[in-house]
Length: 259
Length: 259
DNA sequence: TAGTGGTCTAGACCACACA
DNA sequence: GTGTGGTCTAGACCACTAC
Image (cartoon, rainbow over all chains, first blue to last red; front, top):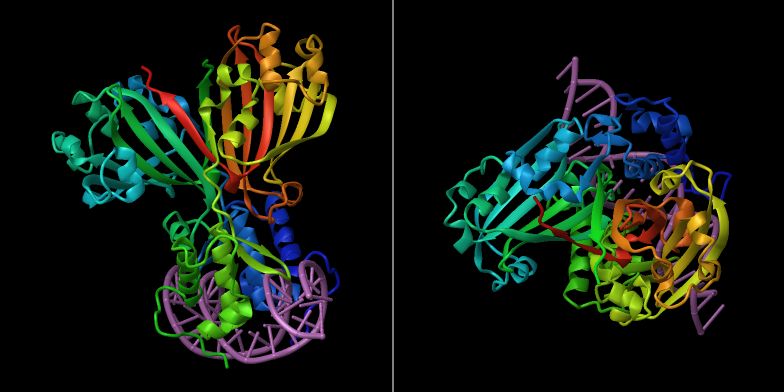
């Protein structure tokens, strides 16, 4: 046909359907691990066309309650115990205790963690990174790109950039595993004493490419976080560029009162 | 017809088109204030159906570079001169200079600002707030709820909660305008010296109600930020519960390196 | 191979903006 | 009014998953 419209103008049908499905999940009618009915079944059940169900499911995915995979369907997610990303995660004592920041936190939350190295080697520093490092754009730096998992699901990608003159004297940085305490511990071992870290957060919606890398629904919120590691000499010896699934973290910062 | 497919499998046509439009904006071919071509014009130009252009525009909107309004079209947004929400906005010197945190920042960015008081009076502290204040849930506190505008558009709602025993001794807190330097300056005037502020950020998607209050599209990203103001005596004398349009801010925090 | 989600078409009608 | 975006249909083919 081609006729639009059902009854309720004001709130579109696809949003009504999405809301109904989300409510079923929140109310426990659909439990974690359950499959959401397939799109064709929903088409029949609601008496609407496939396109409408499709839009509804986009909304349901945006709620972050389901995990959709091609050819398989949509499964109701486990509700991950949200984790605190506290500003004390860069304590020297954690590094001296052999724990890098990421592992220190996940352990604390009782979750399993895994790190996969995606790239390790030289790269041209992107303009924004080069500026933070005090280098010319395009200068060769050491780049280490990792994908972090918690409880088996990817939650964060992180790329560390380290000026080559710093990196070349620290052999462990060129291995997949930089050793106990992570790369910050190695930088300290080699005389780079940290004075402060500066983090910049930009929350936004994931692009398509990003959402596939982090196994998110397109349009899910992410946080683009970039951190400078500044030494007591005032030099930025590392910049870490990370993209994090927003619903997997809570950020906490303590700001000392100053004059 | 009904035939799908063009040439490039792997990356869908609608993403290619979205990327092309985004690049035109980033490259300055489409400048701030320009209208993006209408969907029907894009349909002709790219030789695809309306639905495909529609999906492409959803992606372009997700980039945050355009502002789309029904019946009007999509306009390229002004490139806001990075609105930094820096952790140094709570300097005493700003307050002594008569500027509250919010105004100190907007001024710095060369933007106009406006504050509208939505509520001012006693209220029962919500559970989460009461816990932060070290009170029993439901205890009466002073609540001040404001809506902040920048360049005429609402960007943030903020509700301050202050224990009644603190508030009752500070008459200015019971006025719409608490005077130069804002409520933190008044708290300091009355002997509450701040030691630190603790902020918790939770980025997520806006609910329907929130998106209408901040004039956002439903599903736009927001940041729920809650801040404790802690005195040198270790007491939390204020909790500020804020909801901010994520695309209007960049958050910056300095984290001192500690043992 | 059957079933699922992902992309796409070529139309339609509705609601909003502006002259 | 004309033109815009917003919703919806009833199909089609493709790609992935599981049996």
